[in-house]
Amino acid sequence: MKRVSGRLPAGRGNLARFLARKSHVIFIGLLILMAAAGFCPAATAAKPGPSPAFNPEKHFTITKIEPVADREEVRLYFSQPVPLEVCQAYLRLLPRVKLDWSRSTVSPEGVLTLKGNFKYGAGHFVTFKDGAVVQGRTYVPAVTTFMMPPRPALVEFVGDKRVIERDSRQLLHVRVANVDNLHLSQVRVPPLLLPQALAAEKSGADLKKILEELDAAMSQLQPLLKGKSAYAPFVDSPRAEQQLFPAGGEKNRVLAVSVPLNFRKNREAGVLELIQVRDNQEGSRAAAGPRLFRITDLGLTYKVGGRGLLLWVTSLKTGAPVAGVQVLAFTRQTEVFPLGQTDQDGVLTFSPREL
Image (cartoon, rainbow, N blue to C red; front, side):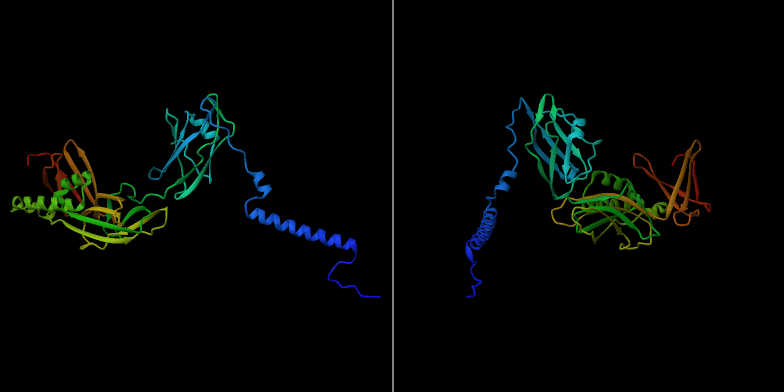
């Protein structure tokens, strides 16, 4: 009896089964090639049908989406006004965003201004309930996506603080975003020029210009102060200092940065400083200040009564009264005059009189 070779199936039944297996493999391979080329029937069938044609008499939609990164808001332009409570019930964003509906508004023209914690530098998808009807019109999707731009560079002071304790690390606290390095500039202000410094702060002028104005004002005062020793403790030359600090530079996140001011000359002395902090990136407009800060160890408590002024001076570090503190006063008309100095209890009293 002859041995049959195993290369080909024996008999018609085996041959049929072999060809069936080969055809099955070929068919699967053909499907894979078709899918790779984009002709997969299943994939084509899964595509959603087109949205119905927009008819302004029957439908309403979102016609435009405008993200405003520096205001942390997104403006959605509806083809008709949609009540805020309807938007709150039916409108959703992906990825999920914590929306602040208490600060969101709808204009009479149908512009929804959304406030929320949007993800900067990322795309967002807007959904509105299918079949929602407002004023007899049904919602039809049109514009449904937007890209929130990167957060603009930010530099701002933390709170309204203006006093920095002298006997401390002398830290200035700021908030920054998308900033690699901070450029800190400061101008030392003679106490006698306090009104001019406050006016300069209000004007928001450049510190270089402020320094020039303070120098000119002090030059004009010098001849008038000769022989008036009571003003001597309040006279000094304006001086500018600057320093560069790293700020973290983390993308699109608001960071708290504490800038040390102990690089300044004579840091152990109390002083008035006009300070400005800005982004060191060329062309950036992110900046805080100028703001007038008092670096001191002195805390002042006062009371005005019918008999005059009572002033009490204590140390911020120890809380103890401070004797021998010279006190200068300014009127609203920027007139200046010395009040005297505190006694051993840190107290100074002043009664109205002709000066």
